[in-house]
Image (tube, rainbow, N blue to C red):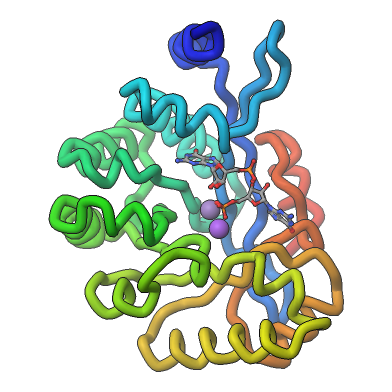
Amino acid sequence: TQLEQALRNAVIADAVDVHFQPIVRIHDGAVVGFEALARWMDPDIGSVSPAVFVPLAEERGFIDALSETLLRKAAEAALSWPRELFLSFNLSSAQLMDPGTTDTILSTLARVGLDPRRLELEITETAVMTSADTASRIIADLRNHGVRISLDDFGTGQSSLGRLRDFTFDKVKIDRAFISQITTDRASEHIVKAIIAMCDGLNLAVVAEGIEQKADADKLKQLGCGMGQGYYYGRPVDGPATLRYLHDHF
Ligand code: G
Ligand code: G
Ligand code: MN
Ligand code: NA
């Protein structure tokens, strides 16, 4: 298709870009890391969402090439940050089914010179479910090299609690579906409270996603949630704007 060809060309031409969204420590608002988010603006087609082009690259078998480019760019940017913040990077489900993923990631980090201990990989429950054996091997190998693993979109997939028992993760990201209603819906508040307590017990770090208002942040602070992310703290912005953001925030 035309979209597929345009995307293939963009990968070759290094034209797919990466933006960064701050992740903060909720109690004082300090920036602790950034999530890398892929962005693609084709001169003819216009801007295409990663929710469209990531699945396309997976289906057409070039997600590894796309992802390697994105990780290289994100890691290079992370090296330019004035502080040793973590870089959080999304991994697609196809990558967790491919045993070559571990080497691709580690060699990209080595080439750029980013310490694997600064990298976190965001994976979803669906991804670890589809190919459990391969996925757990990849996760274990990467963790042995110091890479941390976050369970993304927590609460929206299937058998969430079973995943937490059977796999080794370092962090849970609570899906924004719960956060967006935390000040208006008692059920959402109770669910978030329970997830935080569970993560405390399992020794897992917690990030609340989709914090859009001060009232959400205040509520999460009161609930003892460790980290937060969302438009209230900052939208995803390009590399230069990320440096300016860091200049203006502690
Ligand atoms: O940034 P935005 O809300 O448009 O992202 C839409 C979706 O695309 C999200 O689910 C996000 O996790 C995913 N996504 C963004 N960047 C990447 C990436 O670099 N790799 C993968 N696999 N998914 C990404
Ligand atoms: O699936 P994942 O959690 O990786 O998706 C991240 C997506 O969420 C990004 O595309 C980002 O643009 C979007 N996002 C980040 N913060 C907010 C927010 O506060 N509100 C909403 N609606 N979307 C957000
Ligand atoms: Mn994510
Ligand atoms: Na998420």
